[in-house]
Amino acid sequence: MITLTDNAARKVKELLAAEGATGLALRVAVRPGGCSGFAYEMFFDGDIAADDEQTSYGDEVRVVVDAASAQLLTGATLDYKDGLTDAGFAITNPNSNRSCGCGKSFS
Image (cartoon, rainbow, N blue to C red; front, side):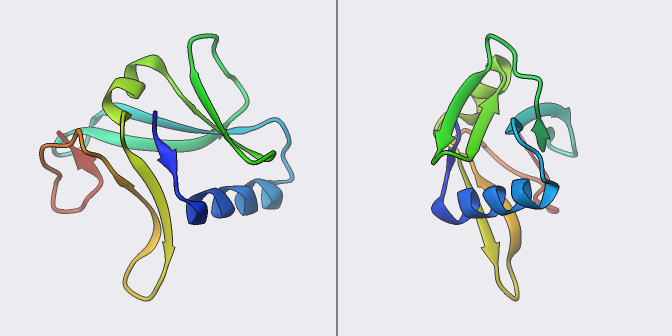
């Protein structure tokens, strides 16, 4: 299961509050695609399946991962940076052998 840093959890909480949505979780998934074979997908989701893996960060932030993606995200970390050169969410995944030049996909 993927782990969120404190910065990522704070940003997800902020985004959920801005949406005014309750009952949603951050879904992190791995899908076939991209130039290296797999691409990450993140979105807010209210449709939680019985076999989804779930983790909570505080009272407001839940993360869900489908069973197939969980295998590829074991040990991965989701971080959020807000700097001049690095801004946005980034996944560090020890299961990735290589990534593409744009950083959006991996194998």
